[in-house]
Length: 468
Ligand SMILES: *[C@@H]1O[C@H](CO)[C@@H](O)[C@H](O)[C@H]1NC(C)=O
Ligand SMILES: *[C@@H]1O[C@H](CO)[C@@H](O)[C@H](O)[C@H]1NC(C)=O
Ligand SMILES: *[C@@H]1O[C@H](CO)[C@@H](O)[C@H](O)[C@H]1NC(C)=O
Image 1 (cartoon, protein in one colour):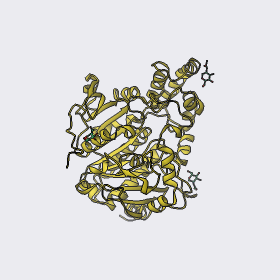
Image 2 (cartoon, protein in one colour):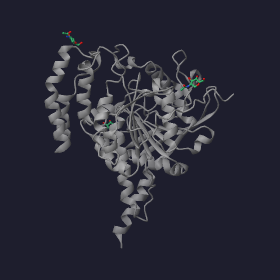
Image 3 (tube, helix red, strand yellow):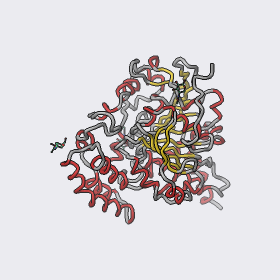
Image 4 (cartoon, helix red, strand yellow):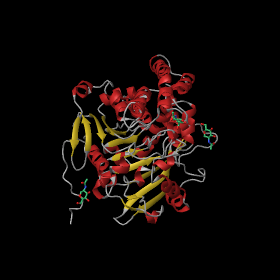
């Protein structure tokens, strides 16, 4: 007894005073189809301040579950999905980008669950740090910040401790999300037998990954394959052969990082062989890389119809006031300072998917969905790592043929439907499935909070518009 036994208590005390929640606004959002409550705020952490908006589920959906949504990038703002269909009100091509110009989303997730969007990591969107705060610049440290954030949320809204918890993200979220799920599990396991710990032990019930970047190696060769080896080709011969010349060296460096040692210098050296210039990645492609059925777009903010409108909406004085965001963030960027920090640390030169093995073993389901027209994070790369990720479903996954499915809600392919480890490929969708397939995404969320991976083989009767 003595000092040593007081130390944990002291830590718990300090942590409680650092990890505080500040509500910056409780709002009613009504764009013509009823009221929706939204709570905006910051969770203040030692390393910085994470901004969130909690879109409460409509009526009974409040009790169904919590979907935590953040974006990829790393460092992209989470405020795209809630305003392109996942939230109750959305941007429309013909309307003003203002609160009064929003229109009811036809398939909002909030009809079935609570939606918590968080600008993660620190430095994305409205999240920020001040000069003496040093936020994590790699996904392992950032995952600890996310876990601290989630603890504060679960304590503030204890009902979410008892409801299903879904982690939903896309693109680079495949890497940051794998770290998060594994960190939450590790921290839960570390305190399971400690009577004095104030931690809320809560595991993700499901991970919902959209076009996830979770394995650098798979991405590098699958990008070459879809851009240079599949019609229509995304690059001309000159660029494809230049790309091919570096492939062996790049993959050798990535394997060394993955199998032997992982340091910042080694990752930066891998970037030199593996990552092409911005011009090659985004200007040279002959089509829209985020959806190869669409025409060429450059700079990339022109690749999404809603990007300019969302930027205008977020930066309007009206929206800043509505969200209650701090003056510390002068301007909202779709991809903010966090992106630069992570790039400087070459965080993307890693194979984070491997972290999911214990998470799946602990009972979390994984549903990965992939727009088949995306060339940023191609379907075949996701298939590749899912096809070798050790877990109890792997053998069955490998033995299952990709089935073609076509019904009113879904057209595409599915591997191992109805299991806890499923991959679906969505025809005619690109990098952001929500943008074009809101009804499908809503169904994935509805099933997720009911304890299931969405199964495209089970046709769901369409009840929308029949409630007259
Ligand atoms: C936030 O932290 C980073 C270091 O990680 C630092 O470079 C940056 O200046 C900080 N931002 C502000 C606004 O102080
Ligand atoms: C290939 O594309 C690059 C980038 O757009 C361009 O600079 C180059 O001239 C093209 N080469 C050929 C042979 O068309
Ligand atoms: C469901 O039915 C409504 C009304 O008939 C229709 O507008 C909507 O497109 C249908 N949704 C799906 C996913 O088929």
